[in-house]
Amino acid sequence: MKTLDITMIGISAALYALVGILTNMGLTAPVVGVVKFWPAVIVPGIFAVLFGPWVGGLGAAIGIFVSDMVQPGHGIALLSLTVGCTSNFAGFYIVGWISRLKIEWRKILLSLLVGSALLTVMIVYLYSIEMLTLDIVAMFLGVLFASDAIVVGFGLWKPEWKTYGLASVVGLLVGSAIIGFGLWAYSQVLTLPLTTGFSSNAPLYASFSWLVWTFATEIPFLVAIVPPVAKVCYRAFPFLTPPNKN
Image (cartoon, rainbow, N blue to C red; front, side, top):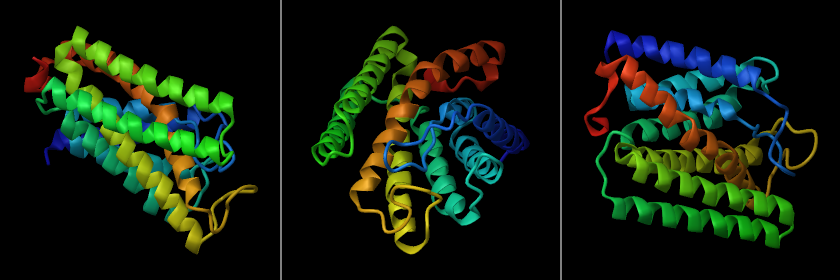
């Protein structure tokens, strides 16, 4: 690993923690709580695109740990290490990895279709068991399909960014799944930092709620903000531009 990469990991982690703390609005997943509204994902998203998977993944993992340990974080190191750090590392490693590949439109559209179908099924299931109200369902589905439209539209407008759209969807879906099922598994053994809801022995369907909330509230920031910011950085520092963005 280059000296530049190590430096960027430290900067990414510090910015991620700081932005996360400053933008914390006290909003958490409906009913099941714990997972916060987190626009700070744009920070590791940008670093993953500019410097690659290891910088994106490690910066995100360290940054989320710091923000979890500092108020208003939950302060539980084991929970952060097992769920927060692993989900952030995996998610943003994938973002940095896939965004640098050259992938055909057919595969991108197929992946978006499969991912959207899976999330739609989860949302409908949560509504059927009265975990979500109709207005929340409409909001989640609206965000999901709007994000798909942004990915496709931006990719058509700027073809060099079409793989980033897929990277953001796949990376965030993997990270959200680790959060959802990781919190469920943690609750079977230890207590989650909740005053209400499923603090212990959470039912399996709670994992779908955590997954859907994480994905639906974070994907708009990744697909709408990261590409234009990264493009400005490429213009300012051309040496950062990977081959598939030329």
